Amino acid sequence: MLTNPMNHNGLVVQPDQGKSYWVLGDLYTFKTVSQDTNGMYSLMEMVVYPQTGSPLHIHSREDESFLVQSGEIQFQIEEQTLTATSGTFIYSPRGQRHRFANISDQPAKVLCWMTPAGLEQFFMEIGTPADDPTAPPPPVTEADIQKTIALAPQYGLTILPPANS
Image 1: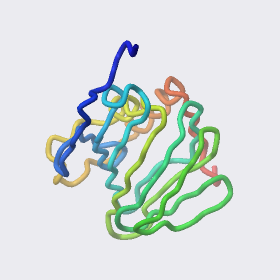
Image 2 (image 1 turned 90 degrees about the vertical axis):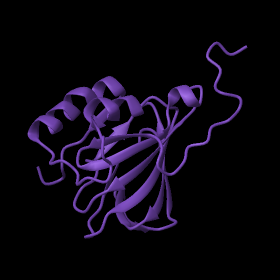
Image 3 (image 1 turned 45 degrees about the horizontal axis):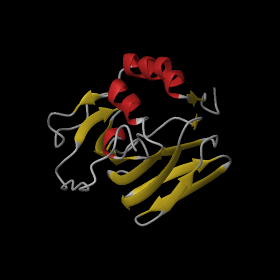
Image 4 (image 1 turned 180 degrees about the horizontal axis):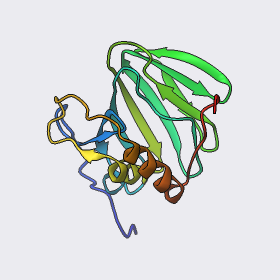
């Protein structure tokens, strides 16, 4: 018997539904979180704006999968760099160095699955609620970056320095 069973009636999340947060210049909308899936996975829709993305990092607790829905995203997986376009799927198991960036001049939309769930709490903690997801993204501050670096280890994340540092 499950002590915290998920909703056995299923879950329907409409296109304009989910909890949205501004995370380091991008819009993350959580379609599922840990409590929806009994901790098995979480799913977020990311709008990655031009010239934004994630730093090079390693997850120790979860695998990540990405499905590019629109636009172009440059991924680095270990030493390999590739440009992913609409329909490209990428799986990055825990322990693998990776990053992504939108190097184009148009926003890109990406679905990201995290297995198991839980890392969504990190993004909610470092982000700010997006009361108006249609508004322009707020600027990323030095305080945002320092908060991300400080909280990452609590979530099993290792943020690696840029190659040119």
